[in-house]
Length: 394
Image (cartoon, one colour):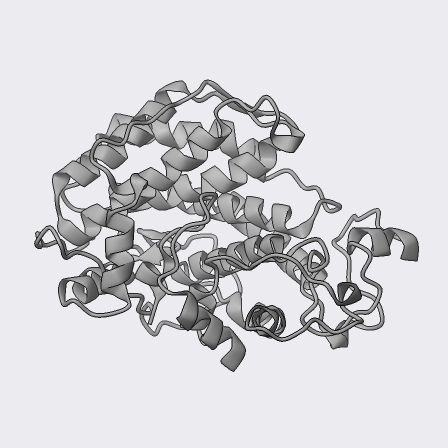
């Protein structure tokens, strides 16, 4: 049965030291290219599903690695503290350049704290964690009305994706005790303060930004049981990924998103941050810095994973592009020198804690697996990636 609404995530109380789980795949159901219009959404189903949450708890409780160490890192982080306090704003104002920000860092951190507390509740069964997650989400849903500033969409993307993950776990976990009226208020916040920003098409922005907003849109769509938003997010994803992750089969020049104004060689060179030689694995932001490539990788994996939990197969459509990009950038992070044709021989930055989901799904070669293993446990980038060794490691 597709819907697991009301299905309990099995919870047990474990010792103060233990609690956590490891990433395991969902069942073996056949995946389709689209979600039928009459299909019910699977809950919890944003990034993690009920089976993964149960596996995570069991692996931590059994003291298995890498899950136990990943859990302990999460538990001992600032986001895992019982004393954590939310700091909500009515208008989260995020201008370009980070100057005169209002509430931007606070919302990102509070969303990550809510997600962290939700995972801690899943592992330990301790109601204090569920109460803390609810407290954080209720504080923001009572206050937040809008995102503003040049980076409003990016902020709504980072936080919307994390809020949706936290809310799915709390809403569909037995004993979490989130009152229906507070669930509705939180849903209203996502619908009015986040969705308008993350569903706006902007084909000429950097691809990581677009993928981050799609990540939020698809997660919010699942939480809201919103088929239209879900389908539109799939369409944007299928348009953006081939335009971001280059493969030789694309031809001499990279593809561009539908409606793009990047229609001359000069504009293309500028958009690709002065890269003019295109080979499999290069991304639109490789020569900007690898950190932004990591954001795109993370968002791509999040979207594909959420879609998979809903029975939609995006991995088969994107695996070759994602694998080529991961292997190229992992080799560089593992110590290989950048060739002269790539960014003039100088590639800056690090991917960050973004490899676990792809590796979990068998995407990427030896260089990617090596980098993932030596980077464990993957923590958080303090934006929208958190604890993915715990949820998807192994």
